[in-house]
Image (tube, rainbow, N blue to C red; front, side, top):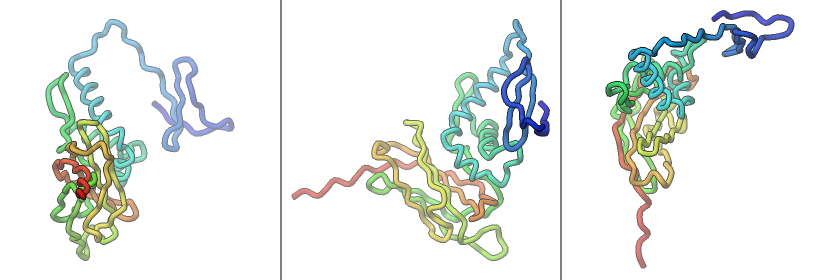
Length: 224
């Protein structure tokens, strides 16, 4: 695949013959279509790679925005934070043997970097489908931490394959974040993650997996 500068007519997009043109992340590209190797069987290794990669994408795609924030500093010109997260999941969080593979939520990182992690994080369910995530503000001089660092909280409902998340509603100084969950999450188990990203979005910490909690339903109203 080659990149090219725009001419007087701008960049080329689309397909002409066996050449495809595209514009991505500020760069124009041309590449030839892959050759079709009829009769060449797909190897077991190729199948395994495809299944593992597909599992990583299915897990990561719904919260691509979270990953773009949480991996932002590490992203390069041609790789987004989401791309890096898919790579991390593919390499470190896929369990099982082909073709029965899955993602282990405990091994997933929602953010990565050398920002200082918060101390003593915990998660608990409050009545009314509310998730409380707390930590201790461990900001110290001459360290990669600041009171203004923003919390990233993700709750993953594996049974429903749904996510709820919050970025920036609480700072490191606040020492807690309350995340409201949908009513239909009541009684379900959710996996909880906590990350931190600097106020400018420059650097983040390696996220913390806080385990699972069961979402609490509304408290019954007192009788007459």
